[in-house]
Length: 88
Image 1 (tube, rainbow, N blue to C red):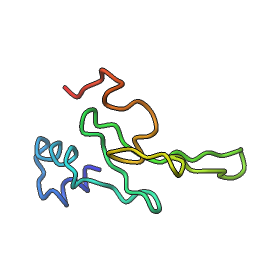
Image 2: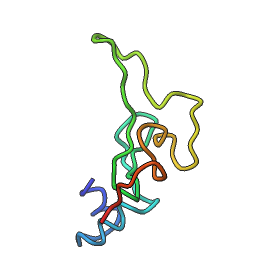
Image 3: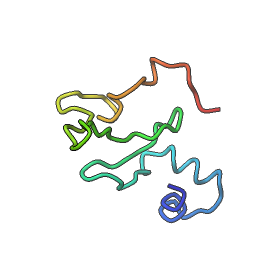
Image 4: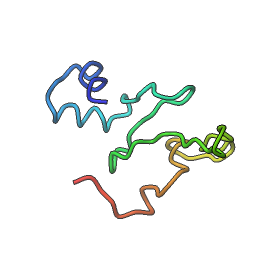
């Protein structure tokens, strides 16, 4: 993430990288078909969850059909209105 922010944000300054992390321009190509991003309000990484039965992957969440106004990955866990957690 730091390397991505430094190269794409064109800055090595920690404050500039933090701002880039929180921007809509930041994403990581870390999972097939789904770019990972950070929630701007707590910097939590949005990523798919692999559901397995011990020998094989059964499904990948978020499940198809669950919509969210910001990111389909925000259908997992608490969202901005549901938590008091804030980035200081």
